[in-house]
Length: 439
Image (tube, rainbow, N blue to C red; front, side):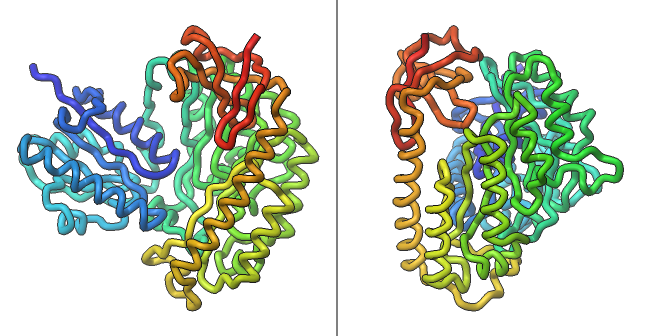
């Protein structure tokens, strides 16, 4: 019997990366082996993102490149999934007639069934229904050989409806997995040598709130901390309005919880935050940052910022710059505002010109680069615990790992160190990484 091969093109966030891992696990049970070469594939899946216009353009650009393989291989099956598929539905076929099936964010568990129908009947399928429960959340994806860190989805969906964001419309309302299912998955992962887990959700801070009698996120972290074999716990993403005192205290109380939090602020202007429907003020955010640093002085704080949101004046932008100067994030993911159809922000007046958005973004990023380098320089001469992950991308004679504060460290070593916790003295700091020496 001829081997069948699967290629997955993944776009967007960590949630999508984990969804793709689940897709690969499901299709492996149906006889499809993963391949890194689309030209070799019998099945190609697109796992798309729709958070910004650029992500949408990138997905269709890649799809256009992939379609040439179907001309050489007529039986090639192409599936289009993820947030963009949820948004467009059957309209995907109008933009790319060679696509065989479209599946939304709640329908990963139906992949084998959809592929089997296409294989047999060559009929088009569109499956974008939302479900009251989310079977795909409990799909176990065995980690790749040699992996030491894994994502674990604890919830999906969002109830916040930030004015710029399409996630609630494309991922549906918040649904939390049971702690039993989460702990069971993590225990299975330790059997594969996993030492670090990152708990995933659109807003992990609100874990359990929509299920009566469910434990909260802080309690879940403590349960994960009791799993033998897990050395480190991370989580993403946090919403500032739901960052509780109990969760902040976990950074002092739970030894396995790493000293890093990604806490998207989005703007330093109260006017803009209100227009964004974020549910907190700059003062609220600054107070929570102060508490985090009081409880855990070594904590690394990273964030997201949007520039050029509708009605953002030069004064509002300067307030964001001023806020960044007060906080001095370890790093920031920053973006130009991208209008998304169906969101509340689409209806707002006072759109900012593209050239002005770009000017603001470049200036902000330049300033943040200075802060990031300063933060990294402060670690020179210190000793950091590193979880060794793999061979460095920079040199085959180097290994790389991460500090508990999420900073990359490259150092001389061999692959036998992968999966080990080692102490490294930081000898040199760069903008995007650190150089270290191990004893």
